[in-house]
Amino acid sequence: MVSLTAPPSMTNRPRLRRACLAVPGSSSRMLEKARTITVDQVVIDLEDAVATDAKAEARRATIEALAAPDWVAATRSVRVNAVDTPWTFRDLEATVTSGAPPHTVVLPKAQEPGDVTFADRLLTQLEQECGLPPGSVGLELQIETATGLAELATLVMSSPRLEAILLGPGDLAAALMLPETTIGDVQPGYPGDSWHHVRATLAIQARRAGLQVVDGPYVKLNDEEGLRRTASLARAHGFDGKWVIHPEQIDPVNETFGTTQADVDRAGRIVDAYEAAIATGTGAIALDGEMIDEATIRLARLSLARGLAQGLVPDARGPSAPE
Image (cartoon, rainbow, N blue to C red; front, side, top):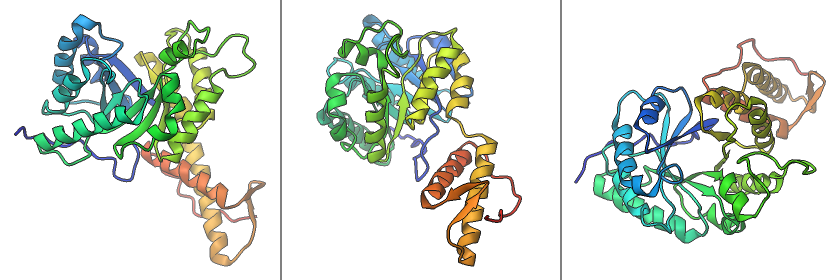
């Protein structure tokens, strides 16, 4: 039996997934560089970024990378090949039993609960073989087909390992026969956001199941304006973050999905004012000309939780007096 150390569990705090850097498993140079990059999550790709005849070598390089010390990214993940390919079993077996298992596995082209059940049960057996606690390796589902989108309500409830739902815009655009040539961009001439329905569907079903939801990449590397535009559209739908394919995309995406010190300070003032009002028996209250109710408090506490995950705490100025 292989003796392994379990990756950190989620406990009660979701992982930060603002910018999620995808790196091809076939590039040892990129894998080495990825270890040093400040980013919430690194996803080592064994699927689309790796040619068929390079799958075995990419798997070996991925195992070596996972075992390397001094990773900066808090979460290291592996995107395995889809379950209808010949490579999924070896991808999971090799990476989970390597001695340094990934924190999560990204399952691409998830279409039906059976896909998730297959991965879940195989992960359970591998964890048992290696002496890992059950559920040590989380699952993320990438929605890239019309069937996967239609079955999403069932997919999100298909495994307790699930942590996040991901939008795969390239393959999904092809599956839906969209006239798209730039992966991750909105359709020129479309009256609004051409991905609105898809993003809203992913967000609703992910939140229904208590999961995070992450946008797909924007492939124009020298177009920060386009990157920020598409990231902002995803953030407006409540998404937690976005995949990036180059380190220069990390900061703009982190800024879009991050919580600022000003956000945290205001959320702290709202909570302080509300709790002070409750303590004194005050009814309806307002702060800075804005009415505060239970929904406001839930939003404020969500902002505080996001700030805490980023290491931010409210400015300690004492409770604010309600109006």
